Image (tube, rainbow, N blue to C red):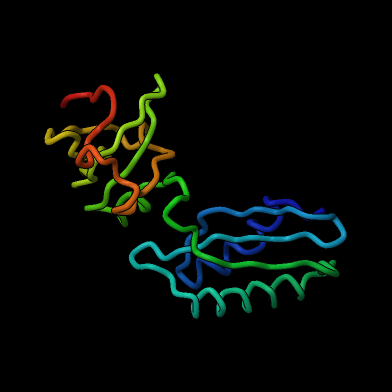
Length: 164
């Protein structure tokens, strides 16, 4: 079966040319007919369905032109959705002003509003009416919350917060 690394190596240059960032790639299904899912987005704006369709055609053409093309596969190109964990600084920049949820090492769930990002990549977050600064790497895996997902406790942290 085709691997995630093989797909990424193949499509990354094409997507970079299109100024599209890869959020993630999943390969599943049978080896004879893999399901290839590529989750993409723009760094500065949200990708539309029409743009996903256009990118899908480009990627499909690229896969079909390989020396050993996949004979039978299903390709899906989509945006990752709000529930996809944030892992890169550009993803946090794109979500300035939004509410995030993450777990601390002690498994405490915390919610806070992402206010700013410093030049040295620290995140400025409002948690329970207090502004705290946290290293970007400590929030890898955070997810963006919709209004409905924010806690009934007024969008505050649950558990302990680290002060500045």
